[in-house]
Image 1 (cartoon, rainbow, N blue to C red):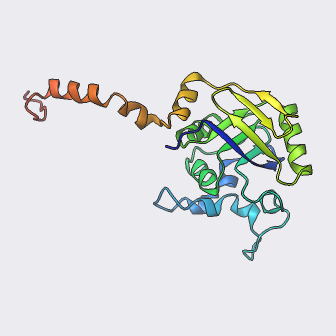
Image 2: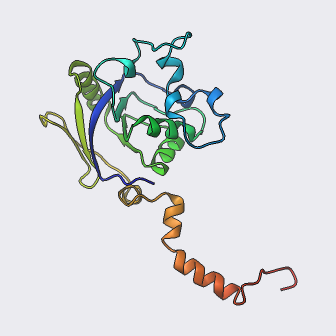
Image 3: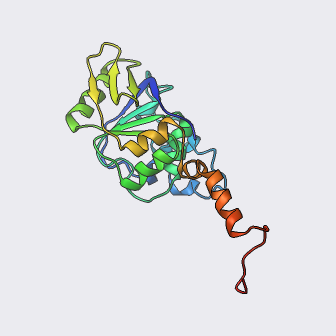
Length: 206
């Protein structure tokens, strides 16, 4: 998993509440057997018209938000089904951080497992960021996970944020659940050798 320590990127404002996982990555694309290739389908039903052309009214298609890597949205982002594909699609599109007043719990966990930092801020602070991103072309924010601070180039928005110590450690060190387990690989190996000193497999007769 990619490490996250600090990041500066263009902000894409999505002034919508209750953006669910079916809107993030529509169900028709879940038939894919790979874990990759979902970025092109992110917000598919909003990004594209029925004829396949880009919808110029959709936020991410507007001038100034190309290459955005920080998404700022309304409350209850990532609600709906537990599909991890939503986090995969956001990451492959280029988003490294999502800021919202609240997230669905499973979606938030999926973000952490895929190296995306979900940050919860007060609704008025989120609204302030969205408004600035709408007015200023190429508006950027800097996020520092180590100091738990967010700021823009003029430092007009400086905000602290909170994150669980375990999640913070995992992101800074690029550790998902498997990576955390593998930190104890030697101990696990020693334990297995103790249980199976001759490399055999335990059976009911043992």
